[in-house]
Image 1: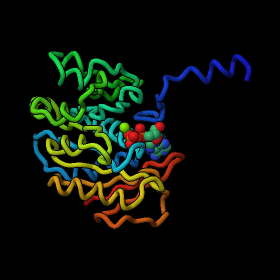
Image 2 (image 1 turned 90 degrees about the horizontal axis):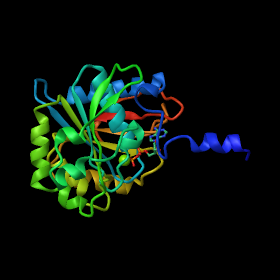
Image 3 (image 1 turned 135 degrees about the vertical axis):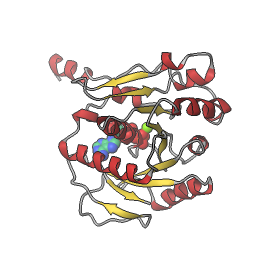
Image 4 (image 1 turned 30 degrees about the vertical axis):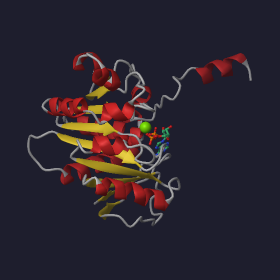
Length: 255
Ligand SMILES: Nc1ncnc2c1ncn2[C@@H]1O[C@H](COP(=O)(O)OP(=O)(O)O)[C@@H](O)[C@H]1O
Ligand SMILES: [Mg+2]
């Protein structure tokens, strides 16, 4: 490999993904608009802020990508949105949105950092769509304790008064209790399932855990589903398809 090629390969920020928000294809943007519409139909109307968690059974199913693009899509409508990165073990929103990771949620919960010091803005390239992001912060030794703390519940109560939507990017439900702990402070959950990624039994366990915690499931996103693949997972109704694009942002099932 020559020097020029080496340089261009090293240029992007590690893990950063340009294919988010305004950089998505038309078809992917449409898919997120449909997800936004379906979500707005599920939550009660009125002035109240809606706190929505995004989770999945396993890592890498597309939670953070979907949480970020859903936030953008809601902000495009003029909604006041906060995207909160609560995947403290593997925070990634800062990479996708190209903002600083610290200080963030872990620092806010762990010591005396102020909300204003930790919240940053996502600004579209044309400065049109803006929403707030509370990134993960310094990776703490005790994420479960922080996420399950009274301080976390109080923080969400405080933030509720300032936004129309708070979208929480959660860890997978799988091995640790973090996602279920936070879900109890939400109004409901969106569960992401990546096509050909998660064994159906693992997915069903994830759904069962959320249901056992008595947290409403607002809907499912099938990420990476090929349009017309005819695959259904036996959960929910109100299926709406979308037009696929190169990378595919999936179908949404209202529960
Ligand atoms: N529909 C999709 N098409 C192509 N790549 C995707 C899609 N959804 C997610 N990805 C990529 O897969 C990786 C994992 O996605 P991410 O949103 O970080 O997953 P999670 O938050 O569930 O761990 C990222 O590199 C992301 O850019
Ligand atoms: Mg993630």
